[in-house]
Length: 193
Image 1: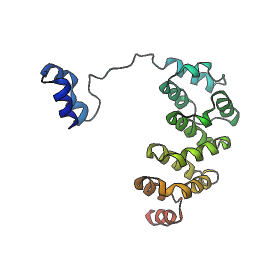
Image 2: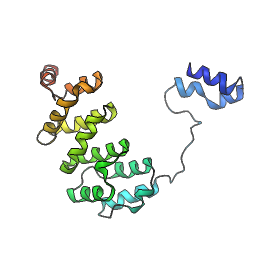
Image 3: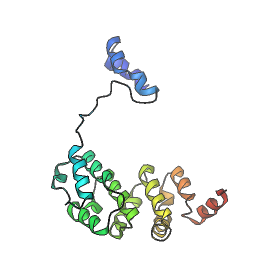
Image 4: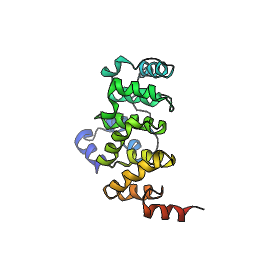
């Protein structure tokens, strides 16, 4: 229906335009069609330099305040996955990441904080996981928490006890397999080979 509507109201029978847009390739075929607009080669060069500098002990970049969401994500996602508490503290102090309202950026921050057992992010993590239930955010964070049996799993179990009924049934099913709820622990044990 979507493609038909585009063809009826936008393309309006223009066969050359229809071929140029490659709608069927975009919608029905795997991969990205060749008519994709490619970003300039140096699009994230500043963020790549900033994350490399920070990884070597540099300061949090002042340019952060002028960056787009994608640029902030690039910086955070390019940082080493293991950082000492002092380096995480510097990022939090510079940007207020625990209170970040942009959920994509906040997720990237929490995805960095969890494997580092960064205690100052736990209240933010709990608020994040109890205020929305998007599987793309919930599954990876809860899985990372559950893998850390000493630090993370108790946090995940406490949060999951509050949120299980809030999450989509497919997300809850996946998290039950991590053994975060009494029923999930029995199910996880039964599914092990």
